[in-house]
Image (cartoon, rainbow, N blue to C red; front, side, top):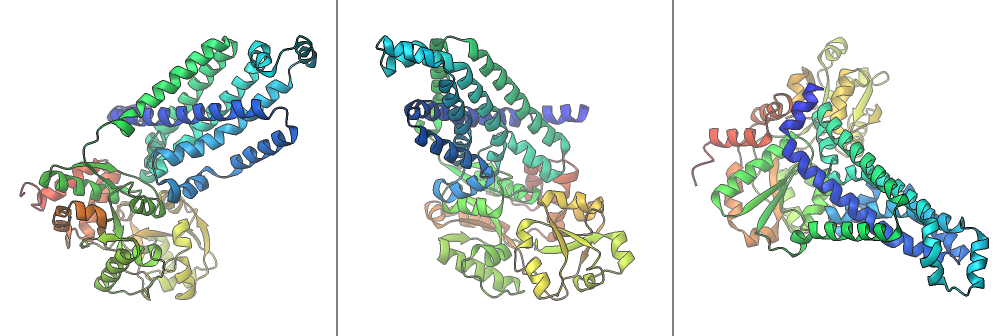
Length: 506
């Protein structure tokens, strides 16, 4: 518990930001769901077929995985708060809609007959007794939705919307259970508090509930007012995929840009998978991120070129093709090659005499491989291992950060890794030589929109200072420092720039 407390104190400022983001996203989704579901339920009550149809539709929406919804919304809405709120609102509608309809259906028919005998119209019946009688059941539905939304909101971190999910994702990526517990426990506490407070509303008068609802709506709207109506200073947003390496590099960009210009740079680490961050860049939600030449030519181009093992050739192809296809500019590549590699434990390599990928044919029938979903579906991944090496491995797919733990636990015997990962040295792993040259070069380089560069042409010279710099050994060492020595990525980035005389010379 002491380490959790120490981590919490160390990251208290980050936690406060994540808490605010989580509350914002959850509250607005719940309030929107109430605004949609309750009036809709009241309107359709007398149309039984329509009621059943809408309940089925809203129920089906709940069965769609939230991650799939977020992925579908990104090309339409971009990344950040908006797609997260829309997805969460869709999830929240069904319990409220269902409970509102149930609450009205449970009203004693004798009351309905008496009301009609007194000549009350529909609005008068609603105002005098229907809403009051159905209210406890409606509030129960809101409670269910609130707990559902608060738990699901952790996924918002995958698309740059923040929240407690940012702690969970970072913890998984860094194999840090303290961070995971901070995010998970915080989210659970928020859900419990919301559940308790909403339950209290079941016995409140309707007028008081409406006042609370309006106050929350105004408060949430005010919390977004600066974002939508405030005067924003010009900001360059630099994002990064999951992992310490992108976070280190984005902090280098930030330091270099802010020293040489008056621009403010906002960094968004652990942004998610390649597809998410790539779509975010094209949509203008972010301005810069580090992409790898091999990823561009194998995954991002609509028409993938023939793979090459020449770094310069791959760089030129990636640079020209991504500019032509998406009007994105790839600046000068850094020296290190963060290429794919297959890794095994040292003892397993010695036991089976494994030094290169071709040697895996000896253990093909008995070994189990732990690969990411992306690697499992790539030409320079499992497909290439099958076609070029003739390997048909037994594969279990998993998140990138889980591979090393699975390997150490002997749940798998082979994993795919990146050549600059700090875990290679930490766990004394053996990288198998790519003897048939399956993996293309993967040089990291800043990728940004041409529009951004036209507006700020000075960014080219500033960021190109990193071109040809940072060796694989240096990158691996920096990754190790962040992962296992727990140094802040910004500190590691600054130390490298100062040692390379790239800071203080502007």
